[in-house]
Amino acid sequence: MTAKYPVPKMRPRPVVRRRADDEYRLTPKTVYRLTAALAGIGGLLIVIAVFTAGHSRATLTGHVTHRGKPVIWGSVIVVGPDGNATSGRIQPDGTFTVENVPPAAVNVAVVSRDPAVQHSMEQIRGNRNRVAPKMWEAPPVDRKQWFPLPTRYEDPQTSGLSVLLSKGTNRHDIELP
Image (cartoon, rainbow, N blue to C red; front, side):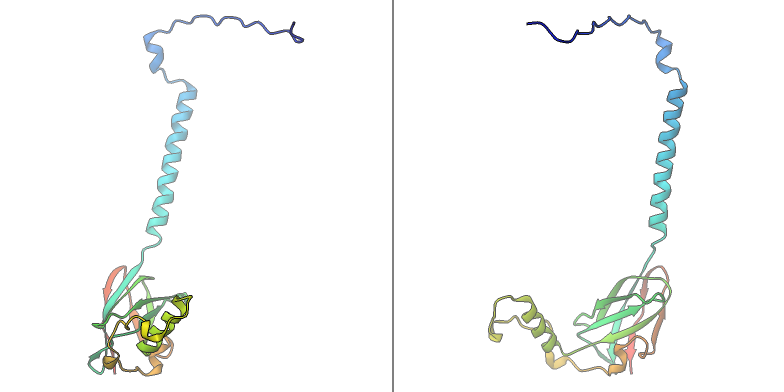
């Protein structure tokens, strides 16, 4: 059986002897490659610097009280000048932390709804199977210590609460009359 197509004959490559100096010679091709690599690394560093420096944020921490008593349940809502809202949960001792807030003058609202009602709604939403209320978990706070706040503090526009935040962590206690 013979091949239908002729097989090209390979010519042997000539043996080239290199001098020891040839390995370290900078040819134009090598210079272009080094320049491109350095430009790429420099561009990557600039992109990283823009993304990390442009998104400096603030954190607001503090203590919420109403008529001298700590608010034990709810959320602190912070609305920036761009209209974006960020919230943080109020802990049972009255402290709160709101992260990723723009460093600017912001409006603040405090929402504290009945913990028993909110907890039962979370239990209903969280369980696909119907569970008797006796089987639900206990609320995270003692409802006897909870008290309702005036509704005007629930809206950042009507609460009258505002804070000027700087970059980093800012401490501001919220005292509601």
